Amino acid sequence: MSAEFVAPKGIPDYYPPASADFLAVRETLSEAAHRAGYGHIELPVFEDTALFARGVGESTDVVSKEMYTFADRGGRSVTLRPEGTAGVMRAVIQHGLDRGQLPVKVSYAGPFFRYERPQAGRYRQLQQVGVEAIGVDDPALDAEVIAVADEGYRRLGLTGYRLELTSLGDDTCRPQYRQVLQEFLLNLDLDEPTRDRARINPLRVLDDKRPEVKEMTAGAPLMIDHLSDSARDHFAAVRRHLDRLGVAYELNPRLVRGLDYYTKTTFEFVHDGLGAQSGIGGGGRYDGLMRQIGGKQDLSGIGFGIGVDRTVLALAAEGVSVAGRGRVQVYGVPLGEAAKGELVALAGRLREAGISVDLSYGDRGIKGAMKAADRSGAAIALVLGENELAERTIELKDLATGDQVKVGLDEVLTELSARLRG
Ligand code: HAM
Figure 1 (cartoon, protein in one colour):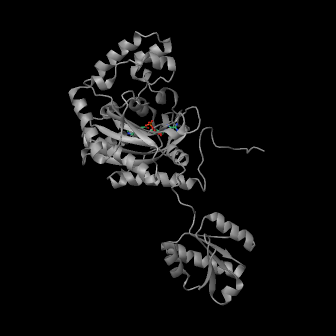
Figure 2 (cartoon, protein in one colour):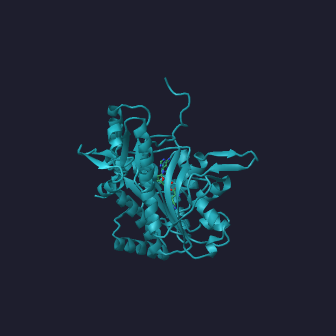
Figure 3 (cartoon, helix red, strand yellow):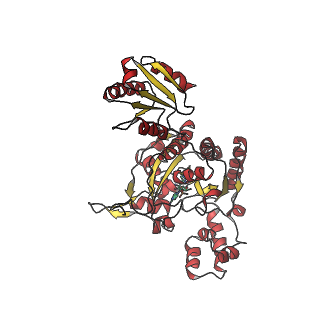
């Protein structure tokens, strides 16, 4: 029989044991950011709808089709955040962080919401770890942001991904390029909706996946060939810094991102083991965003958002488990009520000493309890029966080898510490 309540369509649950991988991915990526000086920022899950409309861009799919927008009880239009960059910029402006030391370097982790058609690796509630560095326009910072993402993936043990890189130019060259591209596109035999798109946001047409459109746009002019001197110099410097950092990349001059705010350096991490939803993370520079959402200054910014869900899937596709085997290190098996009382207290002392411990609860027989010990993934089982209790000892069983030794109840902490360290 199907359950009466299920999670909303397209929204994943993470529960043990698989949730351990999810958590390990989120933590490893966040740690990579913290090691490079990005401080944690915690922002609201919903904001004023206009923030995203103006920040992310009205013509993007994210804003025009995918936002969870509703009126709150006071009649204000609010939207579940579809991404993190606009909210960070809003917070920087609101709290005057841009008047302090620059760049403002922050990282975040949490859920984002997009009403997309659900499929493998595409969810309506997606999880990201992101960073933003705001206030300094330095190619070395672009390279740092990219290297932080790359380091996070590598530390997780991920290998089958590549970094695609391009420059989307800036105010001084993008408008001219846009016109050149638009003229090219409007001379093609495109259907009416696509021509409309070419009029509103011509770059998006280069991202069209239909073979006939791809063929027609194969010879389209590319931004990378129309960069201003300063955008070209910036991009060359980013590449030199990436080389110094040992971060490999491929140039993809046709890279198109789903959000409108990008300028200059733009990138995407792609994993080939994931099918259609191959983007495991992406980002870039957004030099006009602050103005766009009402900032008095026009500070530049650069950042990334890594898809935690897709990174978990990529690791699974490569057969890598990051969370290790067990939920706990030690599993206690009491035989009888008196033994249970003793083990409950012992578990408390062991946890205080930093050892993770679970116990067999309820009235399981020894067989059931030992099976549970195996399933827990613990390295060691502690078995306490009435006889051992009477002589103040306990059986310590290595669950990998099956070896068993008896130790005094007073020595168990020392013995476990030595074994778990080794
Ligand atoms: P984004 O490319 O839209 O960028 O999203 C970043 C990552 O989130 C994607 O590469 C993908 O891994 C994951 N993602 C996006 N949508 C879904 C989905 N429906 N299901 C599962 N995963 C998904 C941004 O959001 C920018 N704010 C990144 C950024 C930060 N740029 C500059 N700073």
